[in-house]
Length: 108
View 1: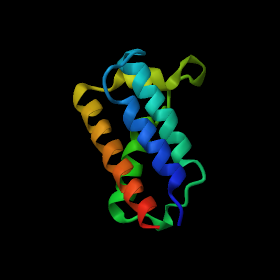
View 2: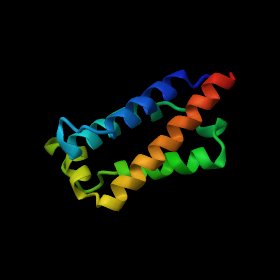
View 3: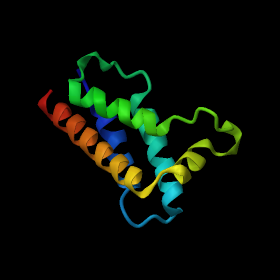
C-alpha cells in the first residue's frame, strides 16, 4: 500500500504545529486540521495497525466541529477551544502518525 500522500500531508500538518505561528496558534492548528483532512480523505484504514488507527481517531476527534457553524471558520473556532494540554496532545499525535506514515512509505 502506498502512503506517499498521507506521509506528505501529515508532515505538512506537523510543520503547521511547529513554531513560529505566523498566523497565530489557532490559525496554525486550523491549517494542520486542513492538512490532516486531506491526508484522511479516501484513505483506506484497513492497512493501518492499531496504533495508527487510534491516532487517526484521536485527530478526527480533535477536528470534530459538531455544533460549530461551518461558515464561521469552524476549525479556527475549534482550535480556540483547545486547552494547552489538548494542543500538546494534538501535536504529539500528529507527530506520531506522521512518523508512522513516513516509515510505512519508505518500507514499501
